[in-house]
Length: 236
Image (cartoon, rainbow, N blue to C red; front, side, top):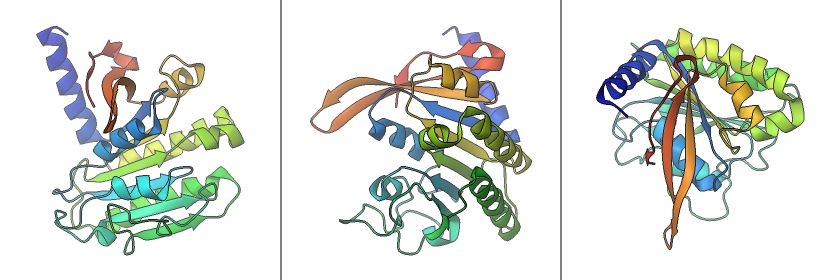
């Protein structure tokens, strides 16, 4: 990428962070790579972030892995994290069969029983409003929101319903100058990704670069559809 294009892209990212943004994280890759990308979107462990994570088919272990290490977090994780467990998630995120890498015992969890997608939509909006009300001064990008993943929602409700939901949620994300990401295990060129990308500020495409004994190695590249801008591949 030419230096001028890179500068334009970095300037755009700073603009998105300061005004609120909605990102899609996509790729026909091992789920572990999308979880890794999601973790980065939720922010560094040693910086105060308020996190709202809605799960539909993520495993309890993968939820735990992307939350801050309590020993590094400036605030108790239970005070800054709210997990919304959609009915598609089989178990409570705290009911793991093993020892997760993060302690979820103190994390607030709300189970969404409403069969309509508006139930999850309302819970996301309420959780964002709650953190905004309880925080002394919520700065841009302090509030991080995620849905992992869109696939069960698309399978059950269809594209039109999911798209309307994301528009409503995305509007509240921008109202709070927050950063939201929505994962989908589909290729960037797929029809469903291209349809949903029309309403996203940017799309993070993930690909498998290598497989090692320690697991898959991923790469990412960013696309900004409404600016006709893409960057080259970088390590995930």
